Image (tube, rainbow, N blue to C red; front, side, top):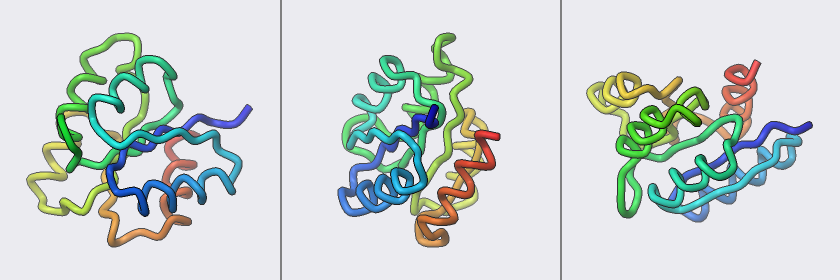
Length: 122
């Protein structure tokens, strides 16, 4: 049974690139382009892991993490922030809110993102 990954990312190119790579690696992937949709999709699909951008239309990634962590049905789903916000206070805030890890988009290849997903799902 393949692991289900939800990508919450407003950049179509990044979303498709990561989605393609994860699908190639036999993950089941769905994606949305804003925070509200992201929370709704996590509630309805209960993915095994969420890859989350922070800068999103509507509610931002920080608010998405807060809402997921406050919902007992989905609070334990791992969240990996995938953002270009690399300031220490952004990283700290994301982790403090309950993200499992933080990756700065510009520093990681799709292959490295897949490896991170695998290591968290083990």
